[in-house]
Image (tube, rainbow, N blue to C red):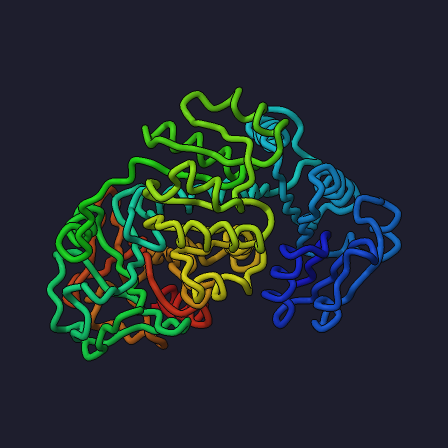
Length: 447
């Protein structure tokens, strides 16, 4: 597949790095934006403007299968997608948009009866994806990752194992968990694996559970003892993500405070937010944080657009005594670094966007519902064909290790056991390692 990426930024680098081994990748941008990282990859690098229709034609970019506009400038992304659609009837276009006004306008047109011929095929607003993930983590206090499936009836939760945990140093088979709860993965020293019954749970492990909402609520209460509810959140950074998050917190009746350095931005967001206290100040000022009693926050979220500033703000918050700190990361390689120095949760919005692209355009037959540990593991949805030969879960001879965690059958959601019957037309939600997604899907569709 030929994929053209317009934008030599961190996002473009992540997309190129993730796809170049299996696809023909072309990166386009101005020469000053193209770093040495791109030249280390086996890809074609073109200096130019993908919003220029002549440039597209002269370099035969109109022959691509997928065009991804992930430039830092929204207008350039929109115009380049328009130009690509005007010269190619076969190229599918992906447009990254940060502006709420642009995003709402284009989505509104796509949902109307207006002519959509030149509109992008798919729109991604990374800030919205990131906000949703942070909000889910805030509302399940002990978890470091939360994903929701089956129309809200099932979840994935990732919990860190602490010294006080009742399951520490126990083998999986010796742990007692609520019914309809499955352990599907364990991350130890940054490496994800799928456990067996003999796997021993250690301090520092991050354990991934899947199951029904009711069973995971019981797990939280019985094993991870979530006695405290999140009542107050501090946000460092009043950009798009900070504003979107504050709006969601207001809707959930969670008190919120935002620190934003830019005075004009403070004026803008204070007119939008009805209950949130907006403070014009620098979140890297430890004395200010102490004066504002940041240690009373249940959660602090640092979401500026600068990794170094987010790291500093997060470390200062931990030093001040904040119970849980969540930090935004622009460069995916920094996620492990942030967590190693003590940040509770580090999240990359680019990873979430990459998942969306992969799901809709790279392997469209496999619906990737979630990724874990920077893409090491995946949760995929597979619809079985009507010709599927009915059998029990234990009778499946999967080509690789995987956990069938959820079965959606019409309006019913089933958390299966070994003797649970799998039937034709079932929707399976499966947890497996990233490299095994395709063969698992192929096997299940051919049974």
